[in-house]
Length: 294
Image 1 (tube, rainbow, N blue to C red):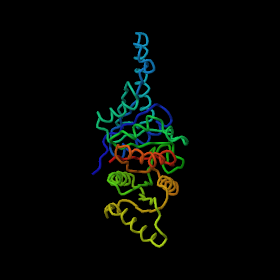
Image 2 (image 1 turned 90 degrees about the vertical axis):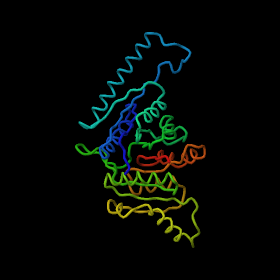
Image 3 (image 1 turned 180 degrees about the vertical axis):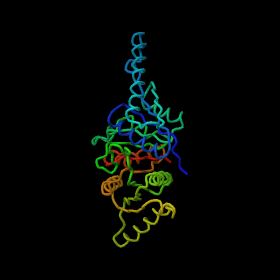
Image 4 (image 1 turned 30 degrees about the vertical axis):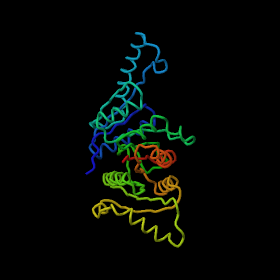
């Protein structure tokens, strides 16, 4: 049985971080997990490494860290429901490095973080921190932008996030199999609907299209047990085209509240593939993306 016991949510106190914290709390409530709310204070001498910090600056830096701790506690108090286990962690150093270090030191099961996800230059679209964490983390990472539709509805007095429709994307690799476990688990936790998608990058001839599509649809459904079918509504979809475009299109068509994808290892070719599919879905998609490494 897949377990999520500890969730790390880095924050810079922006609206994107606030939204990510909503998702982290929602998942934590469903899985009975602890949330680690992290803020990283960067060294003041980061731009001038050749200079030692004078006492006055060191004192100011200490006050800055104390203020960050107070701000983090207030942030958690303002956004977390009463009684939910949330631990505030203030770190000093490089942002990406400390996020990855805390994830490892605390045996984190999931990182949930916000991203502005701006459209435009792909190498700049997510920001260096989110990009590096997505590429280097050895646990799943959920990248959150503000939803463009109401599938993940938020209403006063109700649960902040409802993941009612999950879209799982498969290329039939080992990491896709691992990602399917998370997709099915989240679907069951939220009593949601699950769509299984495979995108053919090369469309078969018209004579073979129907047979090939049916073959791939059956392959998509192979890991789905009868028990899983009783727990949630599942449909399988096979499309032809450019993977990230078809993923985004189906996410919009189904008003998906979450896209779950498998991300290959940490080699150069894998990262190139990551950049061309998962990265673009985060940029262009209408909902958060849950990326699972193999």
